[in-house]
Length: 207
Image 1 (cartoon, rainbow, N blue to C red):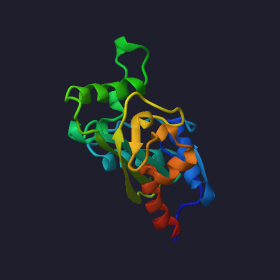
Image 2 (image 1 turned 60 degrees about the vertical axis):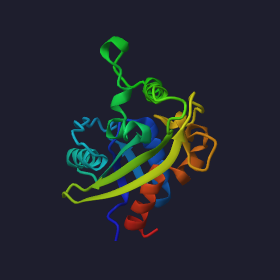
Image 3 (image 1 turned 90 degrees about the vertical axis):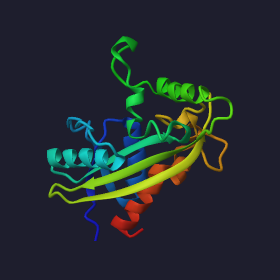
Image 4 (image 1 turned 180 degrees about the vertical axis):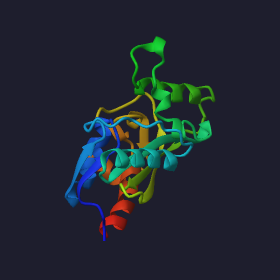
């Protein structure tokens, strides 16, 4: 029997990610609240894998709130870049002090990826994949982990305004539109997060 129900802390300060996860869990009557809304601090993501970082965030939120918590760690891996940026996906978007106010500049990050690909020539392999790890943590220390993946290719320039992160340059396999050109409902059906959520739902709700 699932121990999920009622309120669930989503261990994120990212409004886009909260909205997407909330929509995926809405059919199961789960009320989602972000770690940001609760004023919980963001733990240092010192892991070297998506699983490690997701567990760090989920455990920190569960311990601080006393409520079962869900963390997502996801990123883009590019074949021609040896799997980079991978677990350091968000770090590539961090602005340096001389580049403006602190925060994440995803256009800058997308440009960095494109620049590195262009250095390899016109025939560079543009295949890539999004990974998503969902980690659940209960206040009593129990945890569960679910992994998802979406394969695709990179395009340039960025297209679409409905996604976040690297969505405007990611074209999922079998599609011509980027993730950012998909309606949220469409993306939910094929994304790496949807793949991981399907496994979570099957395990926690028997769906």
